[in-house]
Image 1 (spheres, rainbow, N blue to C red):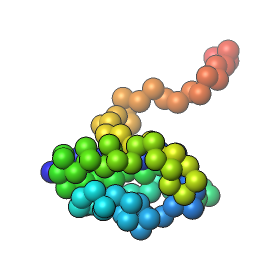
Image 2 (tube, rainbow, N blue to C red):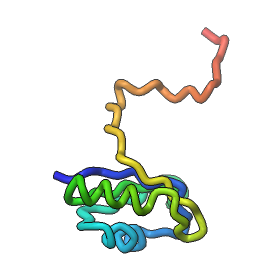
Image 3 (cartoon, one colour):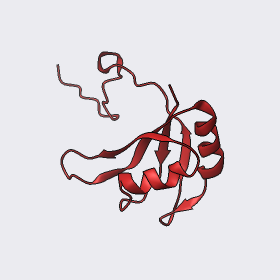
Length: 100
């Protein structure tokens, strides 16, 4: 199994086909998943790419991280494992209530 990559700072005009084209130059892309906002249906500006091998993933990171694509400098790194929902912080976003 290959490595999953995180791609951030994407232009909101980038589609999954664009991602596939960008990354396939550096190896076999098994999947390209653009993260979409549920309410607006618009891109959130990041995606996950799965490459076939670790070496292809490393090459893609090396060649694409920091490069300008569609007017924005990409952030490309190895994706971190997803934390199960029950183990997440809760996302209070700093708001605290004094109500009981």
